[in-house]
Length: 474
Image (cartoon, rainbow, N blue to C red):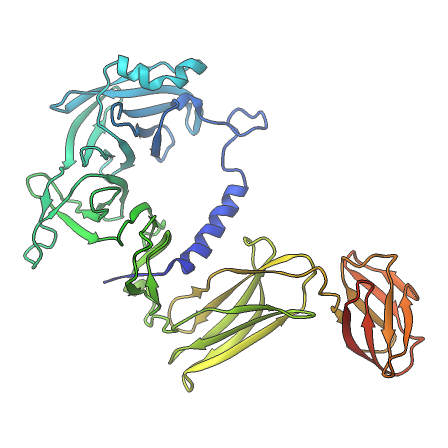
């Protein structure tokens, strides 16, 4: 049996990692001129995914056109540098079997912009909407043609191809052997392809019924082995399928499901999920999730701006759960740091309330928070990401220590150095405190000498009219 995590788990992990990766500049500077380069030599036309051989010596992809759905390969002059090299298009006949790679001119800007017209002139074969290409464990090249609803494969021999055939035909398949279900129609729109480590080909459909199919490693036209892995919520398009390097986890997204979907499904964390918006999921076999699936009904929290801190609070509900609840914070929504960790024990109670006061904040900033739960047994789970904008008029109150002798510190980057701070004693009498005996330490901290003040409890008032903490002076 397979389980689905809700997107909050995967989205935080994967999207943050992906965004970090993209920020590093993954568009390569091929010619060392200090600029990232578009790969014009591959030709300009509509296309989707590509696949590159492990030694980076060849790149395959197809044109996503109904009238010019050609299959291409690119051989770089230097392996790994795809800014320069030879471009080829596949020519075959309707009987398939064999084919030839024809050289497409791609040295000038005009030639790169008109590769489709050049391919048509070379009488390349139109497969009608080639969207994805992948390499099988058998070394063959597989590609999906969305228009006819087929998956093709061939062996690349260099200048020619052999064994060019329809690997999966658009027909009906017995998806459960001797099971109770009738044959299921394959339909149109097969799109994304991915191989697992056992040689099974996973096929996602964009169109038709938007199914997720698995084609067995031993599948042939004469002895079909096609299974239906999953149907999708109304209006969905499954896309972006990929496996983790160890093949323990499968990642995919669901685009534009219908907002009219209202039926909830229970995910691996026992949460009720309605698929009515774009979603990214990670799928694993049960044994990969640990011996106990995290049974908390909800992992959510609230953010509240207080006069001198942000309050992070949550109420956990569940049973027979122990582990650690971690609060993480970020200033950019990408890079997170742990700011608190608490022990969770829901063996004896059905719910428990947790809160944390985050005092290490500055006014006028946006902070991002998330929860991470690490159960003693089972899988780690993340909450959704939440943010809060701290008001400029607040957060003067980062005054420490609250029981002072000689000095106090005020963490307040917005406080003007020519400003004024008043202090009120127990009887409401005020006196000017700043700039008396004050000095700036870091850009965010003001150190104030309070030796001239007598013992007692005082209240601070800032030049913008807001009040700070009560401070006790010994």
